[in-house]
Image 1 (cartoon, rainbow, N blue to C red):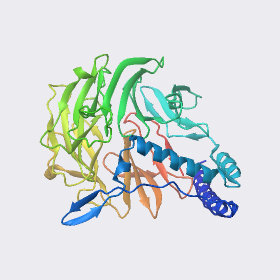
Image 2 (image 1 turned 180 degrees about the horizontal axis):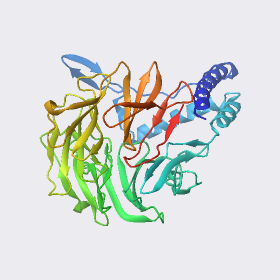
Image 3 (image 1 turned 90 degrees about the horizontal axis):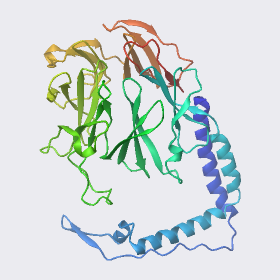
Amino acid sequence: MFTSFRFQTLCLSALFLFGCAAAQEARAPEQKWEAPPSARGDVVDELHGEKVADPYRWLEDSEAPEVRTWIEAQNTYTNGLLSSIEGRARIQERMTKLWDYERYSTPWKQGGKYFWYRNDGLQAHAVLYTAESPKAQGRVLIDPNTFSEDGTVALSGVWVSEDGSKAVYAKSDAGTDWRQLFVLDVATGELLSDHLKWIKFSSVAWTHDGAGFFYARYDAPEDPKNLEAVQQGQKLYYHRLGTEQSADQLVLERPDKPRWGFSPYVTEDGSTLLIYNWEGTEPRNRIFYVDLAKKWEVKPLLMDFDARYSVIGKVGERLYVKTDNGAPRGRVITFKLSSPEPTGWGEVIPESEHTLTGVGLVGEHFIVQTMRDAHSHVAVHDLKGAHVRDVKLPGIGTAAGFGGKRADTETFYTYT
């Protein structure tokens, strides 16, 4: 399935190029097409002593009546050109046929239940399914195709509680980064009262008692209709189920660092909240942590902002971390939560000549993914880093997945 998908994508590109070329030949010679005029303004900015004209500044206000008129004229012109292409219907028919095949995501397991996405072939959005067994047909849990008539509202994230009974899901409208969070009962599919707004660039992390979850959001903009305004000052909150968003507990904010953002992660044993701290688009991060068994106090863990750090798992008081610190191609280190200084680091899986693309801690073993000569290689290592065996793949290609928990006896992956 996945191999043919890649081939079909190439075919679609070729068909599109062929269709564009054919359109030029198919257009009647005597038919004249004139693009609607675009008025030029007299806006001139002075930048560093240089005058720079910006004659189309007026088009930036997409809701202005004159801009809406311009857009409608352009659409009419464009659709007129496209509708004149002979063979366009055949191209559409062929593309539809190529896309019409069943597709699945990698399943994941939570609380004894399995979850996966499936697209029947021509659905605008993949549908989320759940089942008690990976071999079961499953039932629909969330169908984003029902969110809106025009298909512009997407399902942009799902986070299932530790016991599998509840799920937080995110909706995003018309491709925006803004998200709204909702909560549903997994057994019944019923929507709960919780509704959270003004979330952007945030994951969700449940506490293991299922009482609530951590998430990050921004303050509501002064003009709620202006969704393009620059947002700064993200804050990390804890939301307790059944309460209003206004009652959420503030966990971390840094008004002195307005470009800082936060992403929560609760360790598999449920004891610790890890807070990834990012800044703009830097490929580096910091990490804070909170002992959830005590009064919630945010403490620094890795704060040098000198590399990328991704926690693979926690075993007792020891963290296992994938990092490019001192290893551009990646390595796995370990240290105690109470002593994260580099002097206390131990190396579990050293950097090799191959790029380390992913590490999972499943079934008391590390599943290590590397890129070798532009294809995936997957191996199993024990907790001390010793190589146990390679995972035999169907051939030379790309593998992804291998998620799970320490107690799991199975994992899932895709192969292309």
